[in-house]
Length: 241
Image (tube, rainbow, N blue to C red):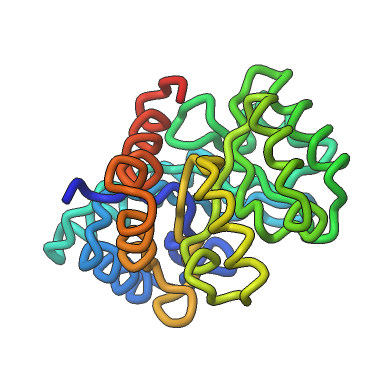
């Protein structure tokens, strides 16, 4: 099987609410490897009014974690990035180099508050896109207004926005409603990336294999390959999906 690539995870130790230490990070990477994930973009939170890890430090921390992983025989490739909580300063933060794109590409992983309305999300993503970036909407299923309307996702796709869902959502870990919504998006070919959004090695571990097996069984191997590997490779190469 072609390896999976996870574009959204919180495995970098001690920088946000994800892994608290190197030991946990290495255990999370071992879990990922055991499930066929060989590449990961590390995406610590970048939030307004928070102490965010600087992009130059993020590059160093990513290299250090990969070096430690390889010393432990964990053969994974790691790349720096951010999950950026949208604010009026987001474009300015990106343009000034205070926030990170994914793997130094033009792709940007953007999140919002779960109660933000669709119009707010739409306008914000348009602003990021208009500044020359390629926005990826993180875990689309978490926004209550959007999860009620598949047509909203369709409108974002027409704009050229990219859509990411969490593997645990597809597998029903967050309720039947979210499972139905994410599976409907998958069935309609409205998803570009399935990622883990992993924060620990327990209930939010970097599990992708069950979801990939599900997608392969229901929607075919080619579609699974696209959303678990091929599209992520295009991000790493900064190619248009």
